[in-house]
Length: 284
Image 1 (cartoon, rainbow, N blue to C red):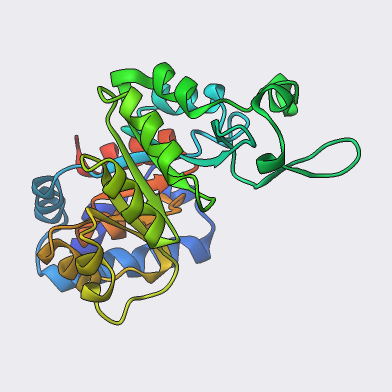
Image 2: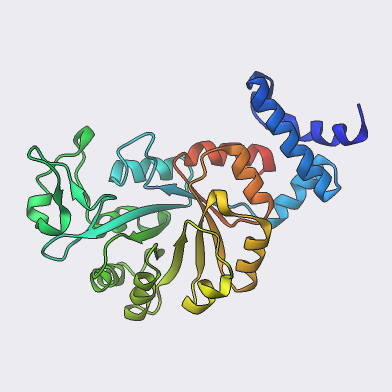
């Protein structure tokens, strides 16, 4: 076997059930490992040590553990934490009476069709039963439920609810939390209202310059679509004091690639799977 091949083979056993993967998948995996070993010019064992020195990435349950329970529910968050998630990510809207609630879509499906959360009172919303017998929780309830067990990353989905979100976070100041949004103005405004709030900027495009978003907003993190991350972007974010969090990452191989270039956090639907795979790979 050529010397280059021996380097690659040293990493392969760290992937569970490698030989049972479809042949196409095995080829892709071999090429990826070959690329990283060749790029860094080190044996597989040394390469893993380099990754371990960078620190284990933060595993963030995307809406909890949505493949095991209804997303954005206390059950989903509880399972994510049981699977080893360091944090949970959730989405919020506000009811007509100003209560911040945890739900992804702006409307709730009703027998007569969808109804906007913003047009329902909390009392009305509390009567709605989701699949599996779940209810839409309030942000207050989620923060109380999670407590000191994990970091809560709040994605603000609706405009004009920044003050309500800041007030809820203020009532739970002992809980580690942060706010992020696709509308970067929302995250910035929440921090203006509550200066201790850590903020992140959601992005589904590759920025021309980091300065155009992260620096101007003084953001603590850039939440970047996982398919639009490279080593340069990670380096630029770090140079400006921002963490780089990838979303949504469900494939262990992709997770390993992202960790290898310095990504700080992985937002995932499968927190247990990623933690197990990365711990095996990094020998944690």
